[in-house]
Length: 639
Image (cartoon, rainbow, N blue to C red; front, top):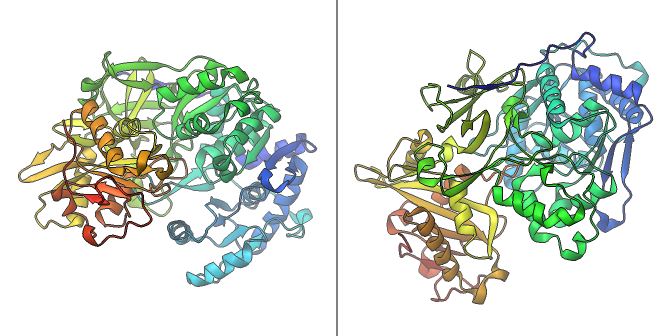
């Protein structure tokens, strides 16, 4: 077994003990410099928000004084902020108070998000909620509605919070919690990852050594501040090195992707990263006219992670934006997760990413071999940690070139899940190894991530990766939104025939050890895919579904009898852009999806709870398919 590792450097004398120490040093040394700039949506003609290091220190002291007065020292504090500088002041205020910050999405009227945030509030036992003045009244009403009216709320954008002059530094140790990072739940319910000050300092140091960051560096981004890359990579790392962080809202990026690229040129941003889908969105939405006005020559580090990195995205992005000064070596594919604070592996900076074309059949059997059929992008080598590939279930180490579960050990591996000993024991070993649940393979010390263990689709003894199936289907027709599909398997022939039993049986594929048929049971491939109706030629949804089935059948030689076309926004994603395939399987089996068009095998249709009567469906608001029926029951195209 070959283990990729880098021996961590011994901290020098005088190295800060906590992240709070780092922030205090920066605010003393760089008082009048801008620490953060936030760019509001340009549709309103708003001016950028600026926050200096001295201003951050003053606001954080006031917030810390209020938290101490209200008994929040050492206790979790929920941060529910819109994008902007108020969040940064609130986070640092928690550090200054010795409280445990809990970043979370601001609740809206979306049921899924409200439920998630209510769960975070109860799981963390937060003693207070920090937000802005515009939202505090709404949050107080919301807290009362979920039977938590005694949780105090504070608007952190006020000028009269606490008494900054009465602030005293907290007695914080390296092993104390800095914050709770709630996982985004791509395959399970969110859990609060306990990030200590020691974890945070170790990972920030690893990021700095990997990316070559420096004092005065400009970092920019649009990722949510409750997302690990957005928080640790774009906000806190800038504080760590004494740089400038320029931010915009996720909505601004999604509405106008060019704004991200314009920000890089306007502020001479050196470091800015995002998940793979963001680069693809720029490819599809930035016009030639907008491209001609871009200047990307300052961009020297563009981390690409949070989902399988697509080699074709890297190539296409560089080809498209090189006229704007983008260098080929700017891309830095990487791998990380909340349980390791953030970074685990990263490609060598200032070098072109490693792209491998491998044998598809061998990869399905867990072997990395040179050949044709699949293209993988390397995620680099381990950064201040050890990486091991093991056999799922047994933990036996595997040699280079064999696919298995990725395990990680090092100073950035966090302390477990807050208040959840069972989940902690499942993932965090007593010997320091973290069981990530991700699948990958090492080759000459470089990690290639192949997928999620719980999401592998096992058909006819072959391990198929859902993102490969989704990619093939989405290439079949321009109306199918790239990155907005979910492929998974369901099992028919269960003893009780119920959707719940099918869901439980589907979980058996997590160990990637089942076969297509077990007794009278059978695994079926299902694809739920978003479609843009305006792009459907002649409104013929049947033709779109058939094209997707044909593409899957051609490339993978498996039956593709179940395709569900849905409207944009239906496919659930995590905050980092990962498709929540397990959630989508549950929604499918529960009958909770509203298809624009679907084709299902009869055995699969029988599994779906509350299956609609296709003869009674009203199709007035959908594009009529060519046969005049919105749902089909034929098994479709297979190989």
